[in-house]
Amino acid sequence: MEMCIRDGMMSLGCLCRLVLRALPKILAFSPSLLKTVQRDDHAHPPLMESAIVGSESLGLPQDILMDIFALLEIPDLVRAGSVCSSWHAAYTSLCVTGPCRLQQTPCLLYTSESAGARAAGLYSLTEKKAYTVTLPDPPIRSRHIIGSSYGWIITADERSELHLVNPITGEQIALPSVTTIEQVKPIFDHEGAVCNYEYSWYTGDDIISDTPSIFVPSKLRDFLFYKAFLSSDPAMGDYFVVLIHNPHSQLSFARAGDDKWTWLPPHSDYADCFFKGGLLYASTLLGEIHTIDLGDPAVTQEIFLGKVKDIYYERIYIVQAPCGELLQIWRSDADDEYDSDLEIEFDRESYVSITSAIKVHKVEPTSKKLVEISSLGENVMFLGHNQSLCLRAEEYPQLKANHVYFTDDDDLYIMGFQNNRRDIGVFDLENNSSDEIVSPQLWSNWPAPVWLIPNPRSISLASRN
Image (cartoon, rainbow, N blue to C red; front, side):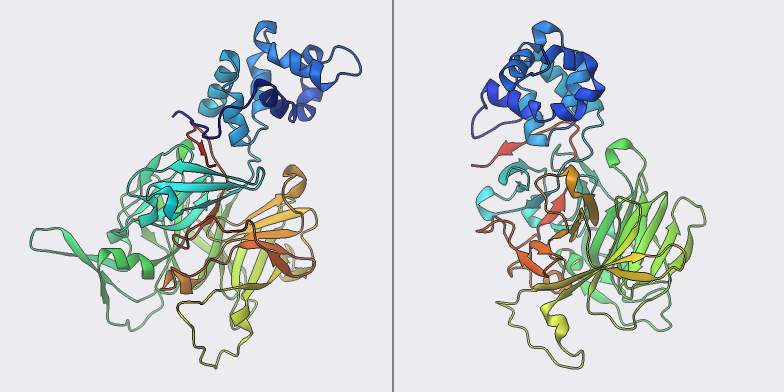
């Protein structure tokens, strides 16, 4: 897909300089490139720039160009691909056959009324600049966004059907019908079309179930879906999709090519998941961690960590740190300070869930206990409806170490406060304070913005003024 830069083409010199920013990382491993761009022991930017501008005539190998391009953020990568035919060939080969740079900096994906119903914004933390992408139908502003993994978002449309969407490439994959989820049954009209859904409120350990509810197709998604996860990049073939869904935050999954969802009773109250070494790690609201082998025909489940609390207010996340440690994060809102027995009155027009504290715990591998840690060190974290992320800040110069970039995933928003202001910001773990990411905010309140690591195979990006 073609790319359009609305703010105009960069000069050739600027394009060369952006590529030169990546050279120090690979010169030590590319002697031929070093010989090309360094005429003496004191190479300086003009000489290096001249060498790269003439790379086509000098015959700079495509594999070296690809090494350079693989270190660029996506907007810079696309701009570099427009310099000359050899650069474009390297860019195309990298995007199509990859792999592209794994250290793409997360962007904030959002919608806005001014951009139109089919457009989504991508706010780059690296450039502090917003881009616009056009997504396939149904319009993104009519969908719920319930997950983000490997550069794909998981959405629920107005009939509560689920799709995977790659916002960078425009690819879209339909997931098994919502009617194949255990607690959902279709109700047909006289013409044989689905007009309503019957939604059952039972879990795997229920003895007596409540009377089922009836929802119109567009309303079911408000009650059914909470969060979704991918085991791997769908563009690479085989993958699993895991849903945390109601009633009571249960799990269901589907493998690539499945025509139905598979329910995973009897446990419930799940809060977050991630895949590690072929196993699904799933954390509950009481801090319990389960491991589930979806690749086993019998789908085996084990308790990795017992519950660590008896009541819950905090939202809980689970993530693997770059060093391999398993972390569990507790995120509190200002409302969590109230006693659970108190009746809290919410002003539906002005209610905002405000993150007041974030606590990080590591799971001790031997004792299988949680130990609270005071700092992420040189790491940075991303929380929300995305797959929870913990990254090395030194690999992302524009990000702040020991900070948590967060978006809201409060149940209250999903269940009826969808037009209220979002709780989005950057939390400093050292002084327990948060700042806005950008002001004024660029995004609409719904669907809720989500963190996305861009995943290019073929790229269609348009810069926003």
